Length: 267
Image 1: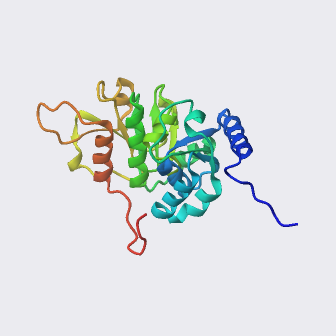
Image 2: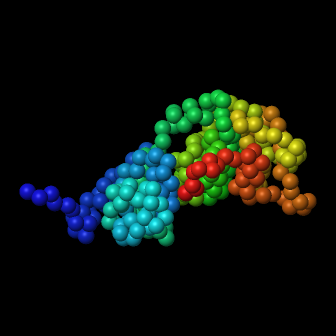
Image 3: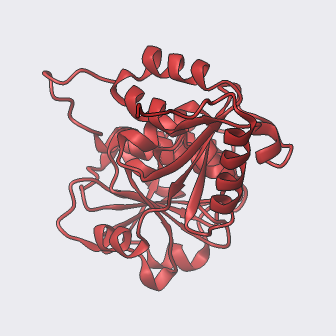
């Protein structure tokens, strides 16, 4: 007997996909990847993606072949037809028309990576951040610069779906977690503060913790007291602050960033 393949247009296949998605979405260990770029990056950096859905799977497969041929086979295998807007609770659908669910990385393994010495790149510390989009942008920056990780203090969840969306799935390219003052990773703490030494006069070590406060309140008193160095960014008089992600980018750029292998093509 010849092998039979399910027809993606079959309503029963769609119903089965919807049921599988809803069961998976109820699990606390799975993360929503909203949009093609989040799915692409998660796959590139080893995420265990359990299901991907789209209104038009063929369009998503075509997009993968065009923009990310390195993961196109994985996208083609995963993506299934389902009513995306309904599965996302009626919320805004990403323009690329696809969403996925992936296993959140092991927290114990992530904390072990943050604690391991020597480090080859700093850890970014966000002190009581408030804006989900800004935190996602910082994760994206940290991944691009090859930072060891991003840790937050406070009540904001750095794995909130809106943070993952803003980070374009690059949570899987670095280590992201929430810590307390007593559980900060080891290393000298450089806190960004207007009263600190000009960053241009310093060399930031690879094992540094680079701490950034909120735009409104800056570094908290308790983290400021814990700092080994106070560091300031160059800023024109009467300009009150930079955006959080901009500040992180300036500091990581000053640190130095990844060294591109001349034989390796960027993707």
